[in-house]
Length: 505
Ligand code: HEM
Image 1 (cartoon, rainbow, N blue to C red):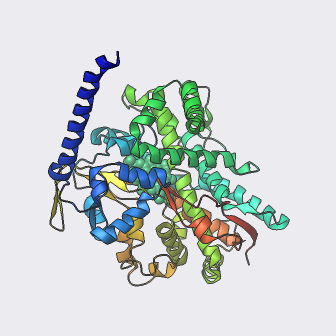
Image 2: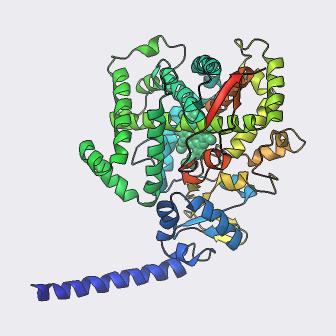
Image 3: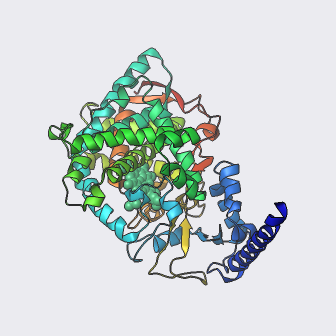
């Protein structure tokens, strides 16, 4: 029996060796990125990135920074991807004029093989989905949402006031996602605030998103594994990969909500004071495929996750930096006290946006605590790029990382220091070009107007009334991002951001 297998094994081994040898020669000599500098192993095999991201737990983003120091501003970080670190080149790549923009499938499917806007690889389909969602996130639509942002914020303030009396310790890791989750749930489904009322501020929901993000990094490296897992019946994949169980339950819960609107069981949108995304989408003229239950379930999942944790992350980091710098906190408080004589009567959003110090604090918060740590990766079928003499033909996979721009010492001297002043000097207008937390171009953040409105309203409301004692927070452990799980994560032994609160004055 064994003898019969030997010729087959020999044949299999020869084919494997031939295939591997030709792949090596192709990647090193004939690949369109063969001329780009970079570590030999990264050019040769994807295992190089796996080692840093999967074995060392989200470290490749940090290693890429070091590789740029060795190999220069353009490097090859895996057999297919070129990474550029040049603040002035971000806008050359990410703008509206470079024709079609495609996301490579392993990047598009990082949150799972979901047919949502964020996970759409094809340019054409992306345009259909984006056109349908854009109107909900325009400046005008967001202006109408101000009371919806204020409601959970007011509830948070009541709880902060209570904590200031009892001396209770609060975890900023949970209180801000509770508010942003309630806002996006209200907008998507006309739901009343609930998370911000929960005793633990909906800890479970925030922890579920953290699990999703860790799994997402795995997806970018081994997309077929997740595709396979999701193709199984839910109960089987829950047993095989318990990490996805919570994600599957969360998707199912969102699906019930969308379907309840579709079949008329949920009519809360009729009494809501604002538009309701899923009611209007269901009522729209989108092609039937786009309104399919699985498609809308996944769009809901994407909007709710992308729309809550990102902004909450900036709120948490910015709150820490304001509180850790008494002079900054006092200057912000002075400005807010003058602009908001009655804390229960907030000025309009445009008035808040005109406050120079608040704006500077928010810009600096977005720069220093930028949540999306993963490289933004695109292909351009209609456009070749030339960078410092290196030709990048159409369809080259190009990655760029906002954090490398935000921590560039030429553009932002002392980049790790929280300095709102840099946004107040004569250079401020020029610096805006390098603030790219929301990315740019046709695939830039859909929710930028909503996120900015939340930052202005929540920070103004909270810092007008409260101050935080952050002496128990260790910045390197609890605030600075030390792992890249698409969004940045803090150290594994961090207890969160534990603070005491008192009334400001
Ligand atoms: C401070 C808060 C936020 C930051 C820093 C941020 C950042 C980003 C970035 C960098 C991207 C591009 C991702 C990529 O290229 O793969 C993006 C896309 C996206 N963001 Fe945000 N985001 C924030 C808040 C929000 C909010 C509140 C929403 C609300 C729905 C949202 C929804 C989305 C969606 C749907 C996309 C995909 C857009 C597309 O592919 O066309 N984001 N965001």
